[in-house]
Figure 1 (tube, rainbow, N blue to C red):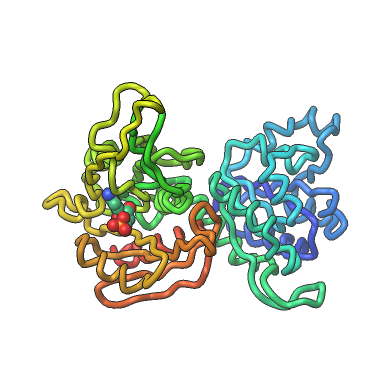
Figure 2 (cartoon, rainbow, N blue to C red):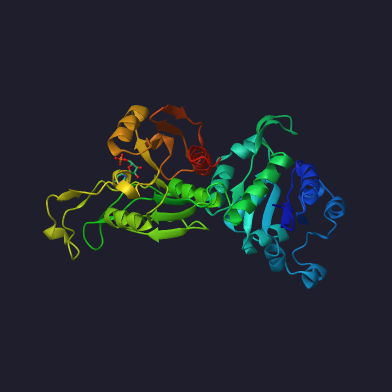
Length: 402
Ligand code: C5P
């Protein structure tokens, strides 16, 4: 898997930088070529000489180095690799990545690359738990950046908690996973997946619509994870601010009726995940022209929208082998989700609490109860990307692909 692969390893500032030396050795043992960018802060922890000795290559550090640019421009440096790995990834470099800053060689290479990027965060537990760091990570994950760790444990600063960089062998496994995903050869290879995401907009007239607060973050993360695991994935997205995830086909729709039609066009598929918050009703007869204030109707006639999850569950011979829905509830979450599982005829329901105080709608995190006929499994609170990865693991093991 690693033989002949080229890894651009960015070492940023953190005591965990010593583990990156070990990572280089493990990568090289497996036949990968490693080239390093060492940030100014990183150079406080490991020397260019150690990195250079282990990579048997030059170590890059300066953005405006005439000799480096003459040898290899920073754009070429970032594209010459098969994968960029940031280990350790400090809170600062995650923030720069989230903001798209380019004020040194490392951040410039990360902005200029067209290759996959894997980060291994390492920092003090409070810095890791800070809302800013969590939001930065969630944002870059949404854009397709992969992450591994951090782990829980004693920290060099004397505190205890999450923030220790993943171990070299864990990072190695994540690198192999990322390269495998790039080759389209993950555990879900050969399977087709369909994911709905986002809200729907149901027109009242040409300028007004009925909608809800869904951001599409969870659905987009699931589609990205399925694609990374090798599934040929179609994402059917309602209106969303999110970029189309890489490595899959995105169909953009506005209304529930369009979403259903797009889903049918994406069949056959073995896996269907309905994460969209489809509007339950639409205006029965949308006005052709903007309704004027003085001519406004006293009430709005509504018509029920098609239930896409139920329709996919009942699709006869075209029914995907695994149909998964969500239940966004604000009370009696598990009981309502169990009732929904039976009513919709799907195989699993991921139930989550969307009461306003949870911040789930539009937020970075989610807390899931996985409801199946056999029982309920409660997952800890995780980022939406982590929920997506865990769901893919469950899917792979159920379909005999683990
Ligand atoms: O009935 P409720 O909206 O609570 O069910 C939520 C689940 O059903 C989600 O998986 C959602 O994507 C799906 N759904 C759908 N089409 C609808 C309504 C909900 O696919 N019209």
